[in-house]
Amino acid sequence: MDGIGNTSERLRGGHSVLFLERLPFVRSAAPFGINFVVNQATISDLDEAVALAVDFGAIEFWRYRNNLRAIPRY
Image 1 (cartoon, rainbow, N blue to C red):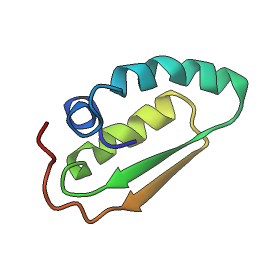
Image 2: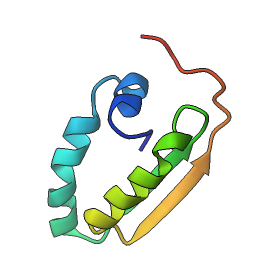
Image 3: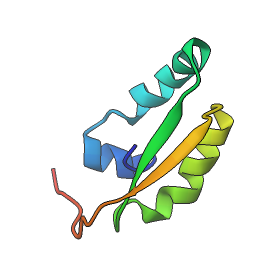
């Protein structure tokens, strides 16, 4: 996961809505965890990402540091 909402949209090009729509199906199929990439572009979304993981029933939440210094422009 690379951020929430606009951050994710900017970095991934429009897949955040699809990701959120599929989480209930993942939850019903098996226990799951969420990987979150932490960098300058996503750090402000970290608390909201943890809350989302809890709300959707993730059993683990992993944070990965990424040294991205600039937000890609599309």
